[in-house]
Image (cartoon, rainbow, N blue to C red):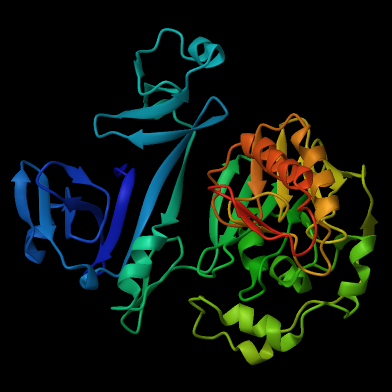
Length: 419
């Protein structure tokens, strides 16, 4: 059975319900007044839900009784393309389709309904959908509000119950394409993303995460091919799982860090591991070590990593770190940006950073024919236009004479720059 998976949800009494807020004028997203849960399950009557219309039940619940809240979206693959989707009960699936000539041609003969200026809705029979992907997005601001009342799990995945506290699996996987996955760590404030790319002969894992749980178990469940690991840079939150991959690549400029000269002490790193984190009960931070090792290959700008019918190009993009690299799959327009580009605070303030080099790196990637940006942290709902906006922000700081250490922190809405 296909469930409706489009919108806001919360866990209540070990079950998952749609989450809304009631006001006199309309239903809207959660705020801090009255909370209501909705469901199509008749069994909810045993939990005190009342029927508001045939087959639809609701109940008002105090926020402190909810274990956590999140947005859960569905993406559907049709003819090899992925669209945000809304599964329907009548055997049809609504696809949210860009309003472009190419999409009009693809869906010629289908009933097309305008959604807004940039999107149309097209209904496709369920049998024609090739795959579904669920995407969980925690509602952080609302979760922060109720966290003082009850301990919360802050990550994505299917809920598990342990000692009265709801937990989510440490790693969340989302299939981005038939041969591409993102593996995320949403139970930690870093919200680190790792990307698994599979070719005909081998696989590439871009970054290995925090090292709090064993990412190898997740990777081997997705591919049976040999896996090489590569880090966008060797900061602790991107190489934590390297110890599970004997073959890994790195940039020459970061060899000193791999040999033990990392700029932060073990105590400082362990403090960051513990910060705003819902740790697994079997994790012991006193045993945490920053990875050290010798790479099997030193990468240089312009190198090609061949996975067998799939090639990934190396771009040396220093600024956040001396040996930072972005990885570009030119055939698809996929750009994996690590800590160079993401929604959040872009750091070029540490002694090992270089603000001028950061600008030069952003100039390079902003000039690429990018279709999709895959960041190292936080939101995955990120469009390629952010490359130009971040480039222009750095250009503006340079023009104002502020592109140097100590220049300040500057807010640009969905990202800010700290130099």
